[in-house]
Length: 66
Image (cartoon, one colour):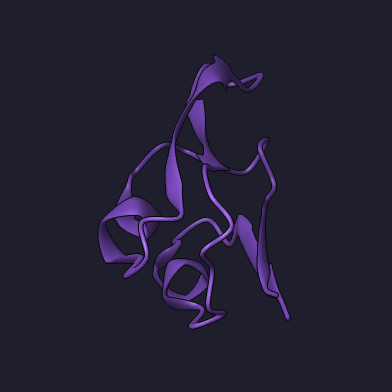
């Protein structure tokens, strides 16, 4: 099973990863990082390791593991 890891301090809440995830694995969390952004979190285990989220992230805040 694949998993998505978000580096919270790098996330800028742009939402590209949420928009382009075909399985809707990601969404905005309720916590904020030190820069004041509500960082993205994984909300389910449906990840298929397509890496669309990681490729779309301009901050490089996402890692996908198989």
